[in-house]
Length: 286
Image 1 (cartoon, rainbow, N blue to C red):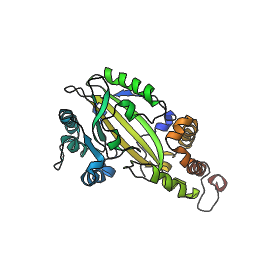
Image 2: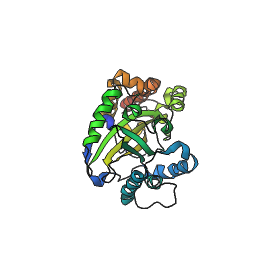
Image 3: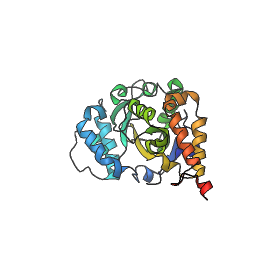
Image 4: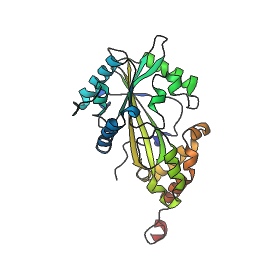
């Protein structure tokens, strides 16, 4: 079991604020921590479920420029794809989304290769402005949309911004347009299996503005690790507990966390009171 590459709960609970920070351009797509586990299934999904994971609206030039930027880092695609954006997406574990500014100044989602959506459907979001894309988020419309739009407007080509979002889920599935099956699994899982079934789902997002077309290229990398790997030290256990309990109630509901309260509590108890194979706690056995 690997050490999770990202532990954003150490910085507190997920919130509304964009939390974007600049990073070095050479750290944009590498190292690709999920390529070994996800690239093969991702490509299969792109072949067999294209209508669900790809959409574009009059964005050929923008897709070509985005693909050029990605392929310059990841290397050429090893097979033919219907569009350049899909070819680029086949080389990285990240999903690729393009926002274009319309005549009214609104940033709209106009093209995407999206194979690991965190509980949303591309067909419902393509063509939507920021307010439509972020509408369900507590406080996301108009407050969040306005703040993000100002960031997008002022972003200069050559800069890369990064942010993290996180949640928990039952199982390790990445293609999750709906959260319902995961919540169902959570409700059916006994407490004793909490550490086995619960996973930490991290979104690593980056944003950069393309110099020729002015489009905004989003990359979204979904990182999945067993929660037990993330709760590997007492410090991590308490930091996670604090973040979980400290989230805004509206955000708690939005993320569907009520369905996971029982299992998360059981997982934290198991980490705080580990049991040896003889049935006694480690403290007692020592």
